Structures are given as structure tokens and as C-alpha cells.
Amino acid sequence: MCLTTRTLRSRRSLPAGALLFLLLLTAFVAGPAAAQKHRDKRLVKKILKAHPAQFKNILRHPDNYRVQILYTQIDRDAQNQPHFTSYSYRLNPEEYFYPASTVKLPAALVALEKLNKLNIPGFTKDTPLQIDSAYSRQSAVKVDSTSENQLPSVAHYIKKIFLVSDNDAYNRLYEFIGQRPLNEALHTKGFQDVKIVHRLNIFRTPDENRHTNPITFFDGDKIVYQQPLVNNPTPFENKLKDARLGKAHYQGDSLVQGPMDFSAKNYVSVQVLQDILKTVLFPESVPAQQRFNLTPDDYTFLYKYMSMLPSESDYPKYDPKEYPDSYGKFLLFGNSKEPLPSNIRIFNKIGDAYGFMIDNAYVVDFDNKVEFMLTAVILVNEDQVFNDDTAEYEEVGFPFMEHLGQAVYQHELKRKKKYLPDLSKFKMDYR
Image: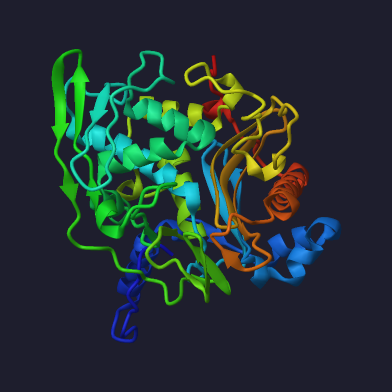
């Protein structure tokens, strides 16, 4: 769960009607995870066991691979309203995994929310910006050669985040939002098992990551909004009992015997990852206080770029050899170089680093009226040495993700539904 529920100390002293009211209230405030059913935890394991050639070794050593899976079925009623039933395998918010690029999804949502809360006339996600440098090892940005007008913007950064998981684009959104506002925006919505405290793919000290750059937004020569250097003076504490992994790790070029300490790094649970995905895809299905402050245009924009393939983008334009259609779509397609079927779209955010692979996805098959959410993590670091740029992504990680997605998809194809979903909401124009 994402929100802490206080234990009712004395049930016997409450009248029956008051007790029922409190129980209903508790179920409501218990957080995003409480809004959906959690049934037979063995279903995911049964699906895995039905494919021994693909999953036998994983099932024999799940602790070594630190596998966590959350599969959510979606059933529609006569009014096409979605109802969710979740099944999990080894789901544990206390078992650390490095979330890598999956934190870019909440960053994109909070960045759009910040624009809407500022509510400045003429200030939109497409407004050009400049980023300055005002603290140790900060870097400035004035142009973006991948955008149509050669200028950076929040919208263009979000496009690059979803199309190819661009690290610099995320870093710039992190700087626009600020470390403390980013985390507080998530915590106040009930997403407690999350801590996003650093930029990606560049090393900065905790102090440097608490300081975020000055940013100015322009409409031509006119300044629309200006933000100074921002500092979060109070570090976020590590909530996990143990975030040390492996038997050795590298610090720079030096091999250090002993586990690598991830306690100062980003953290998010599998449950929270899927809850955030559910909140942006099905906002009407979650409590109002859990939703992000987004406009209808924001939702359309997000759905488009969360599901767009690199080959469908003109700005930025990507080399299909470097960025095939499967790039960023681990589940179902792994690292396939083949064109993806046109009837399937995946709205997701992946991540991979330090031997971890994660995909947080909503899968839609428009022809067969299939939809489901699937979030999975696996560690593929056989030698248990971290930060050595060695991991079994090709041998273990990609095949696991592809086979898992396909196994769940095949299960969904056979699943009986009383009402077939109307999925037109998720049909995007990618031209």
C-alpha cells in the first residue's frame, strides 16, 4: 500500500454503523493499491510454470533474480467503466531494486502538473526555455537541435523521455521541478514508497542533486516565467532496512569488496510504479486526491508519446538501426528488430541499469479487445559485482521480459469477458 493505515485500537466500543463507516473510510484512504482487488497470488506463478522452457531457471532461483511481478486484469462493465483485479509474484516494497529510467514517468507528470498549477497566460508545455548554471557542476542549455524550432521545451523533453528514454531530458525536468517539490507532489497523492533524489547518467553529489538550475521561459523576447536556483536543504531519508546489494562493486576504477550501498539512490516500489501508471491512464478510476492536475490535452499528449514508436517520430528523428520499434518495449518484444504488429500498442516506461531491468506497461490489442497492466523487475547480474558494466541483459533480461509479456498476453487472449472494452480512448494519431 502507498498510504499508511492506522490500526483501529478498540473495535468493541464502536456501534456497528460507526464501525462499518470507519472500515469503508479506511478502505478509501488506504491508498491507490486498495482501490483494486488482490486475489490468488499463485496465478502469476501458474502462468510462469506453464512455460518451463522460458521460466524454469527463474522459478528455481527467484531470490537471486529479485523478480517482482504485478499483473492487473481489467474488466469493463456495461458502461465501459474499468474494474481492476491484481495478481502478484514476490511483490515486496522492502526488496530494493534500482528503478533506473522508470522514474521518468512521474517526473513527466509532475512537470506538466507544475505548469498547470502556475497557470500563467501563454505559458505552456511548448514554451521555449533556457537553463542556466549557478551551482557546482550544473550545465546550461540554450538550444535543442532535435526539436523542430531548435529550442528546448518541457513538451520536447517529455517526448524524448518516452520515445528513447533520454537521460538529459529527464535531468532537465528534474531541474525544472526541483527535488523536494517532485517528491512531495508524489507523496501527497498517496505514493509513499518512492524517493527520487538524483539526476541520471551523470554523477553528482547528494548536495549537488539537491540544488537545481535557474530556468527561464520565453515567448519570443518576452520572459514568461523565471525560476531561480533552488535548494532542498533537508535530505530525504532512506526508508528501507537494507539497500545493499552484491558481493563487490566498483568505485570509479577501483574494485571494492563488499555490497554496493543504494540507500542514497532513487527508490520506488513495483506497486507504486503501476499505481502511477494506472492514475494517468484511468484517472476517473482513482480518488480525486490521487490524480495529477492535467488537462485533456495533456492526457492526449502523454498517451501519444507513451505509445509512439521511435520510427513514427519526425522531431526528434531517430535512426531505426539504433532505435528499432521494440526500443523501450521490453514486455512482449524484448530486443526484437522486427516491425511490431499494428494492432498492439504499449503505454509504458522501461528502465535498465546496474543489472536491473524494469518495465511498467499497459498493453492494448485493439483487434482482439485485450488490455492489461503488467509491471515486472528482474536483476541479471550473475557475478554479483555492481557498477562493472557487466550484466546478462541479452542472455537473460530481454528474453525474460519478452516471454513474460507474451505469456500474460496469451493468457488474456483466452480469458472470458462479459463486456468487451471500448478502447477508442487509446487510439492515437501518430502522424
